[in-house]
Amino acid sequence: MATMKFASSLTSRVVLMSCVFAVAASALISTANAQEKNIKRFAGKTLTFAGYSSTFNEEWAKSFGQYFEKRTGIKINWLPSSPSTNITRIRAAGGSPDIDVMLMDSANLARGAQEGVVGTVDPANIPNMSKVPASLRIQAGIPSMMYRYGVCYRADKFEEHKLGTPNSIGGWSAKSLAGRVMFPNTAAAQWLISAPAIAKSAGGDYANASKTLEVLASKVKAYGLFNSSGDVDAAMTSGDVWLTVGNNQGRCLALKRQKVPVEYAHWAIESDGKKYNDLINPDNLVLVKGSPNKELVELFMNEYLSDEAAAATVPLYRFIAGTPPTKAGVQKVIEADPTVKAWIIEDPDQLFLPKYADFLVHLRDWTTNWSKIAR
Image (cartoon, rainbow, N blue to C red; front, side, top):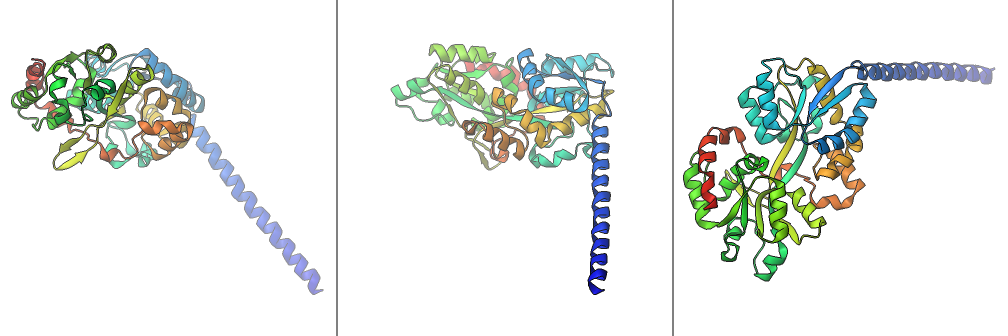
């Protein structure tokens, strides 16, 4: 009899537990379905993305773009552009922009904020922002990837002339380098990004461009100023230039892959009593002020920061030598190709991120006096 009661009790418990698990499983399925339905809530709509070159946009489209469109049902219109073009375009639209989200490096983002063309996202709609280091969080959107800026030099020429690694202005000032050094011109995309760091390297401050550039010109004899990466590539390949300052590490690596005997040198920068080992340039996904598709943009940003999207975006990071904005993303890239450790940024706080808004206050003074370094 006792055995029968025990069996009956056990059966009841099993039935009860089965019911509990069934209810729990049903709840999980319902939640998952609701979330999936939520992801598709904008299916059929179109988001206009103002990126950089057509080639760069194609890499975005093949990696994250393909993942995002399949997951959400949102179509992306990839528009070749540039930060300066976007600023002009948005201002001309008079509050009715025809782009929704744009790529802007941190220097041009400061310009965009100054010009009143960037919006403000709602952090509650981008919960994955918690994955981003606090120092890289912005009100206008999210960081998309980060790059190192430093010094690229002709290793063969440096070895021939017994020159040390050119990590700072002391190394750029060697007599045998006179007329062999290039800096960016004010028209180059690299200029606004790197000019504040060049000022710090010369021991100057943002408020006195003339004096700072006179000091730099007295120490470093420049070959000239480059307007584009193409200028750098040609000058470094020919051997006319042995050292370029303020150049993306990815470009230096690209030259090395082309068998040009170059190496990348970390850029020692000191600012406000702190020492940094390179200039960091975060590229950001920025909400366009006045976009009628703000919610789509916020979904786009939140999805981009997800671990799943990081895996899908690995080809883009490797194509441009850009570091993902999350630890999970960094790990995905390293797992895919351990050699990326040559350029990956594992601790962004070790790199110098200028206060571009402070520099922009004195922008006219800097652009007017910059040519002094090419004497």
